[in-house]
Length: 450
Image (cartoon, rainbow, N blue to C red):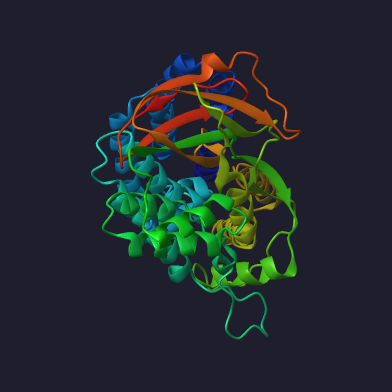
């Protein structure tokens, strides 16, 4: 009987839970959002060296945001491209990973990014390239739109009851993000030769995000075929505004639909009929923290013009809504895993012809095994709540641009706007780009222009 107890002990060691990614990332996230960007980068590098291998890519994404925020756009682009390629590879999950995840939890599967992260990698690639050499920004921008199409088209339909004949694609509920088309449109407009492309892009931007007022002006301007008035150029200010979403462990209700979906999952792993446990299930939930900052006020020295950035991508809302759309499948996988684990323990008892003491010990192992599950809280932690943009037409030459954070009551949140400024060089008929990161009223890193 000793070998059996040895097996039980091994199971207890192997499947006892440990800290989740959200716990390990909390110190770096705290340092980042309190303005200590040097410490945040140091903690990220330390995590990359010591955290589980499956978390490396999300840590690299955080490092890319730090690099972009501190003016190292070339490094940010290189890192983002590396993770994009990893995520594309990991989307093709292996059968071995699927089986392992049924015996552990979703953390055993190579992290291919949440759907919103897959899209945003390409958005930030475009932004990074705009601030680098601007040779691939248009391609990256188009990839962001194409990836959205791919995600929805390739999603499996889910049947939630016996009466559901065709099933439903939960990703049809995703709201389309137009920033990729917006960046592509402004680049095509700048050529002065591709206004038709710009019109198509801006028209789609307006259709997908009608509350974006700047888009209507952009469409009207592209229809007139005038990029800017003679002797003028254009400054695009991209603001990374607010603290973005992250994941937390939360308890979820096991519904009849979740039980039905879990039974379908179980059929792929075992022919044994196992009654799933309906004990509390813990899942990763996207959390959008409350922010005080609403937008940025942009002024230019020696002018009377006042501009405000507008939201072109609501990342927090995007993450929360997509998480909710996929929650049923997440719960179903957790229920199915518990059923598989229960079946394994039951089968072990049968094979071992266990007496009541051994049976009790194996039940304890089963409890430990089930309770060791950790929801997959891996995520891109340093994202802003939103990406915003302001378009400003200025005479060619050097200009000093000031940025001031504005709260939701339209009050300025900075007592020293000159501290949040950047010098820009405007060329006639050309675009100039500014990126500013305002997770709070205080900018993070430096305001950069290209």
